[in-house]
Image (tube, rainbow, N blue to C red):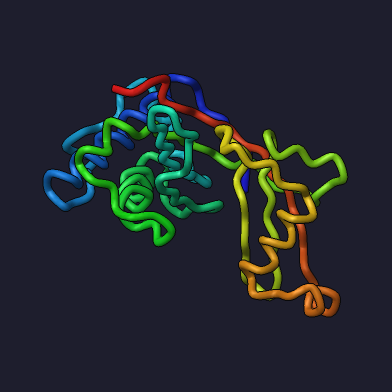
Length: 197
């Protein structure tokens, strides 16, 4: 994974294309074809680079806290991030098994976040959940949590988070002592829609 920083203009292009991809899927039940809605020419070179990419949907309802309405992404990609984005946006909105499918009327309640993960490093003592995500690996399996891109009203200790990630991998505390678990942290670049449309 290489550090893949992009300009604010490219980030905004990804955000607008993520929303277009979701709207297009709602209307046609197909993935947004890039030749029909191309990226602006001044950012197309940046979005042809390969790398990790995540799309998160945040819902804020009046008087309630924000929560994740859908998430999908990859740490390493074989496709350019611009080509990968429409499918990830559709998957976050309609195929995240942890959340129900996005409905037409909910589209105006959703704020889209784009997260580009950077190079990972060993998890240190000074891990900061607002700045760094965490990844746990064992035997070719992986569990992760992204940084707190928006306030979810939860304060989770590092120990609790690592326990939760181990359980996602199906590893109990007793098993974790015998398995070779690898813990990493990663930072990244975050783009967020500024407000509801």
